Image (spheres, rainbow, N blue to C red):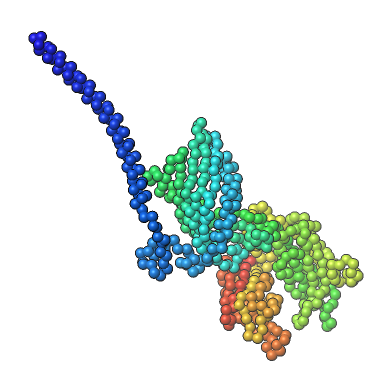
Length: 567
């Protein structure tokens, strides 16, 4: 009995000690296992690094450069996306000079762009952060990096309007560093944008073109296709773009948002200068009603006179407006109304001249005078009776001679603020919207503006002039001597009793020369323009190819002003 108890105790002690020993051995084996794994991984990485480095050949050969014609089809297909557009598309121009300029200026452009962007973004952020319980948002680092964007090519469009349209292809694989610190709830995490890639195909329109530096008033930018945008985004040093699914989601989100804002026909409008000041755009309308003239002097030997009046504003390049001719009348009554665009009422004056119409030869001058617009009150009609003078020299004794008088009604109407916000073309169209008073009911006013011609050349001489014939009535522009690409910018008006839907305007470019006695007159080409479209659309501005001319083209602008309905 005693012996069996001793044997039981010995076995118990043996097994307990054995279990304790096994437990201790398991603990130490676990520790050695971890150390072994770490040492093994470290040793493997170090060995792999040295094997990779030293297994590479030290004798690296330069890559063999071959012409594109010697490449196989597979290689060509792989490199086609990287070929500049000016090589693939002949209508894209090469702009290496622009890339060199940007590369040289990039360190300065980087600072200027970042400073401008920070000045624009900071007020926007300050306005929005109270809505999100954020204490502050600050730029810790803002730089576009050392790599400038490159222009792969540029397409330029030429139109008949006062604008310049460009479509560059832009690629930018930059190394910017934009680090933003956001302070909220006692924390200040940082967000960093790195490794930016942007591929854009924008359309840039400079409009309107003005005679003041930098020669355009506004920049309109729109995207012709969705942009490609790729970048790295780090939050507290962690690359968020490595999260599965987030990279593609962010890319598509940016593409869609940018497309919704700027994909053509939507535009980003940037005003460079005030168009009204840049091109002296109209700020009001002067309504001039030529009522009558009194006690005019005879100019014809065998009769009275055939007077008409020319009116225009000083500083305006548009042709003068003309009244109708009143034959054999020294006290004519016109009651004709004209609308003139006013650009500066403080300095401009209304100039008018009275002439005696002559069927042959130069028209005889009968007298002149001016009215300063600053003497007129807005929306108040002023009746003026002025003496006709020989000239505006107050010291000229010839002005003491009586030449007759003229009576006019003047009303200055300043544009409202909403009208001032309209474009230059819209302002002109607003004035051209209706025909003046006195136009036959159901009819209107056909306005023809002769702009310019190109490649008109005569066989014997080239002194181009444009003849307009509408319903038997003929008008002519001035002569331009020895010029194959003349520019006139002259306006003509035809009053009609009904819309000219079925009529045509005959336009002919002719050349005359007094030196060539045998061939004094020569046709340089003509065109017959259907007026149905201008009645429907109210305005057309096109270039017409001239018949019987090799390459001649003529730019004509047509406007239809329907008469005001009777009240």
